Structures are given as structure tokens and as C-alpha cells.
Amino acid sequence: MRKAQVKKRIIKVPRNCEFCKDKKEPQFKDVAILSKYVSERGRIIGKDRSGVCAKHQRHLARAIKRARVMALLPFVAGL
Image 1 (cartoon, one colour):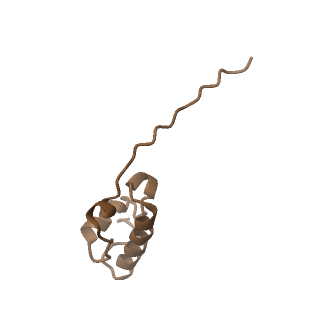
Image 2: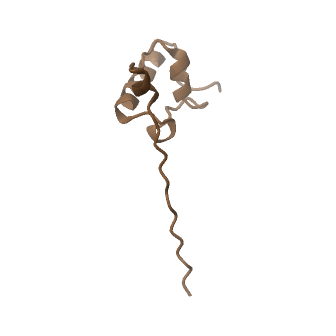
Image 3: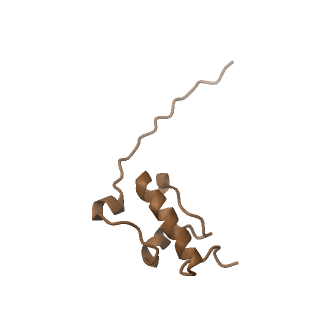
């Protein structure tokens, strides 16, 4: 016998981008804001989990990478 197939409904919650709302771009100097979008292991959080629009996710990733090069953010969390 086959198992009964259960369809899971995915409910998308509309999220508002924090940067669109405030009408500003992510800057590499704002370490407090950038650290919200980096996991505890040092990875950049994706736009599906962070709620940032695609345009600002690209700017955010670039700002995080620049902050890492400038030694404002760590590349990897403490070992």
C-alpha cells in the first residue's frame, strides 16, 4: 500500500526590508547592524532568513566582506 500523501502548505509571511523602510544602504562601518546578519559561526545569513530584499542582500554581503577585510568583523567566530 502507498502512504497517504500529505500536501504541506507553505505560508509566506510578507517581510519588510529594514533598509528599504529606513531608505538607507548598508555601510561597512556600521558593525552593530552588520553583526545582526552574520551567524555565530561567522556565516552571512541568507535573505530568506534575514528578511532583506535581494538588492539590499547584495549590498549587505559586500559590506560584510569589506568590514572583514578592514578587520571590523571577524572572518570566523572564536575557535
